[in-house]
Image (cartoon, rainbow, N blue to C red):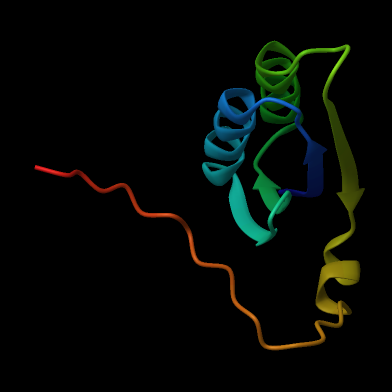
Length: 93
């Protein structure tokens, strides 16, 4: 297993939603534009990177992917109790 910290700055709302949805399949949102992802194989990392590359505009957006050692995650310090709530889909009828 591989641990990644993925953060992004996406200019367009639709592209931002696409990136957020993609990353939510890989891990937990820990800040508005930051995910802690657990990836099974190096091939899966390459697949994720390719999908992110397709989802962004190279001139307007940026995604940063940082590999993290498991031991570093175990040592993380979280200050504050604020929890992010995922936005639920809803329909107006």
